[in-house]
Image: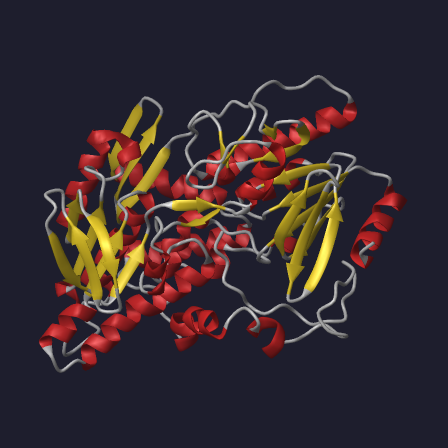
Length: 482
C-alpha cells in the first residue's frame, strides 16, 4: 500500500468522521466546502493552485485595473476558520470509483486521498476547437498566469510601437484582436479600447494610442448570443461607438506571431496583421470528466463535459457529485452561479444522506441573470424578464461583482481601483515583466521535467510522500488551465 494512503487512512480512522474530498477550488468547490462547515465530516479540498479565482474579473487584471490578489485570495485564508476543512495543493490525475480514492500530484509528490463522498468541481480550460497550436500566439483567459501574460503583451505592444521606425510595424503592434464575442471577449475588447483612448492617450510621443485598432471577431451572427438580439445589438453599437471593430460571422483559420487569417460568411479569406491576439472563444472541460465517464458509463459531450443524474451524481455512484463547468444537465449555462448553486446543493445532499434524512429532490437552478460590462458607465444585464442597458446595468454589474469578491479588504481596494479607472483615467496595475510574457512559452519548451529538476525537489527523489511530509519547500508556479 502507498505510504500516503496509509497516512490519509490513519488520519480519518482516528476522527471517525466521513471523508469528503472536493476536487477544485473554484466557485463550485469552495462554496461546497463552506456549505459543509457545520456538518460532521472531514473535508479535503484539492486545488491546482493555492488560490480561489474570481474568473469573471480576469480581464480587469489583464488590462491593469485590478491586481491579481484582489480576485484570487488564498484558499487557505478563506477556510482558515473552518476547522473541519483542510486544503491540499496538487493536480488530480486519477479518480478510482471502485476503490473510492483520488490521486493528486505536485512536483513528484503523489498523494492518494480516500473518500466516502466526492465532489468533482475541476472546471474547464480554454478550447481552441482542435487548433491547439493557436495557444502559442493567442493566450486564453482562464488563469492568473493568462491574465498577467496578456497584461504584458498589451502594455508591451504600445511600448514597442513607440520604438518602431516602420509605420507598418507600428500598426501591427497597435492592432489588438479578441476572438470570441461572449461576455469575456466583449469586456476585454471594451477595456482595451478604453485603455488606448483614455488611459494611454498622452503617455507616448512617437505614436498615438487613440489610433490603435481593436477588433472583436466571432463566428456567431450576433454579439453576446446568450443575451438575445436586443441586448446583443445594444452591446455591438456601444462597442462600435468606443472604437471597436466588430466582425461577426468570421472564423479564424490560422494564427501566427504576426497576425491571423480569418474567413468571413462568404468564404473569403483575409489576413489581419496583429501582434496581440486574445482567445476568448470556447471551453474544454477538465480531463477528469473522461476519467469518470469511463468508469461510470456516463456520456461525455464534445466539450468533455459529463452527463449527470438530476441530483448531480453519476449513474451507480450516489457518492460522487459533479458540479460546475464539468457537468451536463438540462442545457445549464457554464456560469459561476451554476457552479455555486451546484456546490451548495451537493453539500446539502451529502449532509442529508449522512444524517439519514430525506433527499432534497432534483437540482433546480435559479437563474440570477447575466451581465456584461461594455465600457465605463455602460453595460447590459439580462435578469429574468427584465432587460437593462447603459448606466443602470453598469451599476448593477458593479454591485453584483463586488458582492462575490471574497474578503472585506479585497472589496475595499477593488472599489478604490474602480474609482481610479472609471472616474479617472489611470490604471493602478501597469507593471509588466518579461517573465509574464515569455514564462509560459519558455516552460513549454523546456518540458514537464523542469519544475522538479530545476526548482526545489523532494528529499530522496520523486517517490510518493505522505500528505503531512513538509520536508520540501513551497511549490513552484505552474500554469493553471482550469
